[in-house]
Length: 126
Image (cartoon, rainbow, N blue to C red; front, side, top):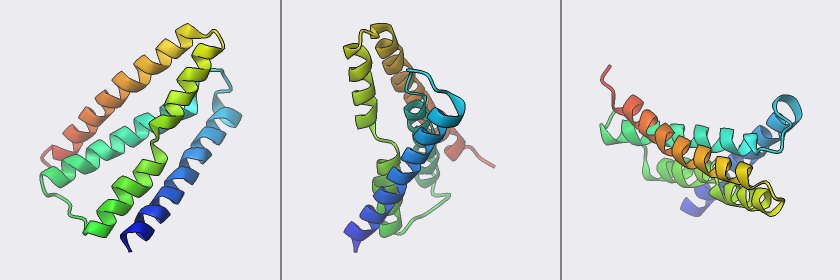
């Protein structure tokens, strides 16, 4: 049952990630910079930070299957750094070293900051 929960969550997360990438490339930002991946990773980091904070202060509780569905499946499928790695590799390979460095800096520093902000939001008292 746990594998099914993770699989369904992962499928939904992956479809959501693709939708964000597709929408950002076709409607917002059609640049060489992987904006869709940035949006997905920073949003996912913020969400996981908020949920982790809420769980840490016991403001929410998830049954085990729901926790696996959300954290491993849904968010794992949505916020994949494998896409980040490929985007960065392709940028550096096409002689866009500055863009590759910018991609690493924005996603790593921004992701860590988003997790911290989310955790603060999740642990903040009402």
